[in-house]
Image 1: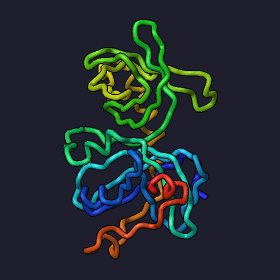
Image 2 (image 1 turned 135 degrees about the vertical axis):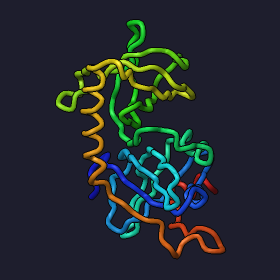
Image 3 (image 1 turned 45 degrees about the vertical axis):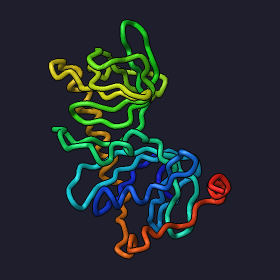
Image 4 (image 1 turned 60 degrees about the vertical axis):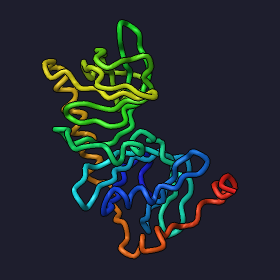
Length: 227
C-alpha cells in the first residue's frame, strides 16, 4: 500500500490530454490515477504532480483518495481548482522547481497568527492555503510545524505576498534574510527527498482514441450524485 500522504506523479502527452481526464460531477473534480499496484486508504491525502511529454511546466495538485479499483488504480477528488482553471495559461516563468507538499504552517502578520497549509514550495517561494485578508505586497512571517512535534512551530522566514485569491496565496521568500534562506533550503531538500521515491505512472497509449478517454467506471457514490 502506498504510504499515507506520499507523492504521486502522472505523465501526459500534453495539457489537452490531462484536462480530458478530469471528470466533473456536481461542481466537483475527480481523477483516476492508473497504476496496478497503487492502494490508498479512503480519505487519505494525495499530493500529485502532472508532467507533460511536450515539456510544458508541471502542475501541482492535491486531493483525497476515494476508492481503490483492484489492480487498476485509485479514484480521487481534486481540490486544486485554481491549478485546473489555469492549466492552459500558466507559463514557465519560475526560476526554481516547485514541489507539492502538505504541511501545517502559521502565517504571522502584525502579531496576528493564522493557520494554513503549505501546498507547494521551491527555493524561491511557496503556495499556501488558508490565508485570509492578505493582499499582494503584504509582508508576512512564516512558521513551519516541526516534524518531531507538530504542536511546535519553528521560523521558516520572511516572505511577501505575490498573489492572493480564494483563500490561497503565493509568496516569495526574502532572499536577503540569511536565516530564512537556511530554513527554506532545509525544507526544500526534505521535500525533494520525498519526491525522489514518488510512485509514477504514464498515460497509456491505448487511451484517448477517436471516442475520447477510456475511464474506469466512477465509484457508486459518485454515480448516485451524477444521476
